[in-house]
Image (cartoon, rainbow over all chains, first blue to last red; front, side, top):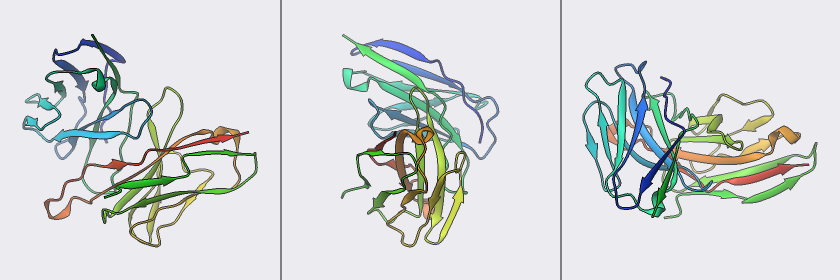
Length: 111
Length: 116
């Protein structure tokens, strides 16, 4: 699976949009981009995933560039409860749900 | 719906002891996997299974054994605990993705293991 690069930390004011970038320049055509978050050492929680189209659900939006080499996770109105480590993961289909976690981005939402 | 249940939540072992970390899911997921997380690091894959009777090694399998006799259960065995196995262990499960089913992984709340 392709390697990803994320900034180690970001800050965001409560109520503002949090935009978390991820670089995956070696992604191949059949690999998806997944985002998970981990709140205070709990088990990781799925947020969203996409292949090449932008995706939106009740938690977040995922914007994938046309060349698919990078993506941005958007939390539209961040709250204190969104403070967590966010992981961007690229994985293909098949072979079990093997996820390769990097060190992620520590997002701190402040008043 | 319980999701993914891990037991115990906390455990202290002496070097050389053996133990089994339990993981059970009630979502009829084909895929199950075990990860460990050391301080300040992301999760690393230990072993995984694509269905009952089928297991394979992940990135850091040494010192651990698994088996998958049922769809629901995927226990992780530490054969002879070492201080280097002090970590937080997470179990995860998901569908395989066939038939258009969603493929996101569901994680348990973790087992915090200390080996002294």
